[in-house]
Amino acid sequence: MMPVTELSLKTARKLHLAAQNLLRSPPRKAQYDDVAAAIRHMSLLQIDTIHVVARSPYLVLFSRLGAFSPEWLEMTLAEGKLFEYWAHEACFIPTEDYKLLRHRMLTPASLGWKYNADWMQQHQQDIQQLILHIEQQGPVRSADFASAAAHKPGWWSWKPHKRHLENLFTAGEVMVTERRNFQRVYDLRRRVMPDWDDDLHMLSEPEAVQQMLRNSMQSLGIFRAEWLADYYRLKRAPVKPLLAQALERGEVVAVNVEKLGAMYLHHRLLPLLEQPLRATASALLSPFDPVVWDRRRALELFNFDYRIECYTPEAKRKFGYFVLPILHRGGLKGRLDAKMQRKEQILQIKGLWLEAGVTVSATLVRDLTRTLNDFARWQGANQIVVDHAPADLSACWGRGWRCE
Image 1 (tube, rainbow, N blue to C red):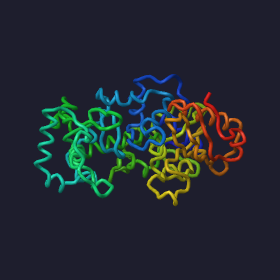
Image 2 (tube, rainbow, N blue to C red; image 1 turned 90 degrees about the horizontal axis):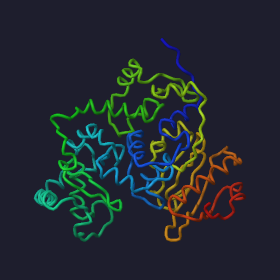
Image 3 (cartoon, rainbow, N blue to C red; image 1 turned 135 degrees about the vertical axis):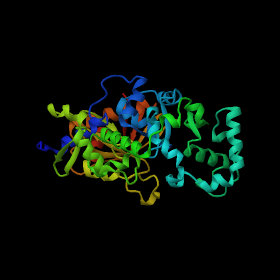
């Protein structure tokens, strides 16, 4: 039996960031094809519509690519290189992985609230008319239909056609063919995926689950067994037997990490152990970034206790509505509550907090200032206003600055 490799906690963090393309700053200016490549590298790009700053999918890509045109994501979707479906949550997924999720579409009731069989039965005639409308008239948005009177907020008060489309989407009858101003545009599945044939291309659920776990291993890079299933929200996944198989095949190796104990390392990262690992990237992360979307993993690996508070009543929030973790040179060093004042072209830093034990060094000030400048300029801001920050940072920044 080969001896188990011993790794420091800092090295484990760097290996995970390397797997997520967040170890080093982008080596060059972003290009169009980098969008699809980045999503393929992560396996998934979670979708969220909150836009107090850039929407989450754009922010996740910006953290890895640097300044890029947000339209590239919509173009990549419209070209058919991506599709949308329920993976971790609602996600953009490389089209070659459609086969991994097709079984979920054929058993939509297993997805809980995302599919309402009673609604589909009760509105069967209207839904068939909607499908016929799409077939004859082409792709639709839910906004194309008149709104029903709604007296209560929430999913249950959606106008009927929106609910029809959401259920048809979960059942794989319609797909998102493009987005216009981030609004979904739906078309029939057979027109979006004309070459797909269930009889020829379908994977069994066990086969699909195994491949999703393998994708998770590669995208996490280094992991505990209990971290794997969450990546694709897998229930009762056969993690232990698959890991035993992966160890035997050399797909992963066993490692022992300082403070964390037994973990697994994907074989693609093994060459990184042959050289000193330098972490140079600084970035603001989306709350829905793969690095932090599993709160337990973020706490165990980075000692970063984090939760998104946009669903928490304002009076009970500890930090803010849409708080962004601050990645700095291999660690999660703080968090930022920001808002983009688009009309005024101002990035407002409502609050910035550093983690306990983080020293405000010249390197931190320089890197964080550059990161905020890049973040602001990418969103069209020419000024940064600071409402609250640690005293040592406020001494350097004052109440804000013009973007350089």
